[in-house]
Image (cartoon, rainbow, N blue to C red):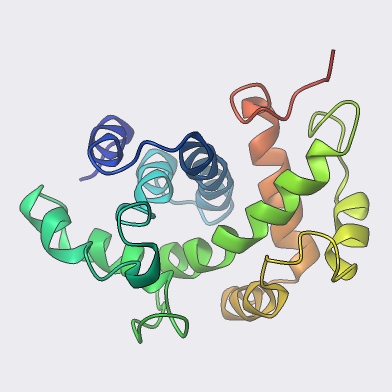
Amino acid sequence: MLTIEKAKELLNTTTTEEHLFLHAKNVMAAMEGLAKHFGEDSEHWKAIGYLHDYDYEQHPEEHLQYTEEPLKEAGLEDSEVRAILAHGYGIINDVEPITNLEKSLFTVDELTGIIQAAARMRPAGITDMEVSSFMKKFKDKKFAAKCDRELIKKGCEMLGMEVKEVASICIEAMKPYADELQLGVKE
């Protein structure tokens, strides 16, 4: 089973850009929250979240096309590789998210981008952020415009949850990591 240590080791072999590591940490934190919500193994979900963009820096135009074989060779289980591949569903592949793990990763990949952008605008970062302030930013299509809101809504529908509920879980899960995510109180 993939551990966070192994996920970090693997991502370090393909990634050098700080913003990609930061994104990996954001997704990791959000996945921990959703794992707890669904009563799943939060350490395992964190590791999957951290590693999800394994080939992105090296192959941004062909993202996920250079993921499956190297991760299988590194010892990941088929279900772990499939979970990572499923976050590209409808965008770059046809690996449909079926499990809660797959659906959660599909959803939070984009969702954490808006949460992070919203938290950065606040004096106290994410530490005192409420879901209501997130929802205002979510509804403003010009804010964090590159984050695909329709994809987020689709992911939430797959999970059988409202955007507000998923966002609340993710925000609360990200708060303990505020400093690591560079979303702590500004000095």
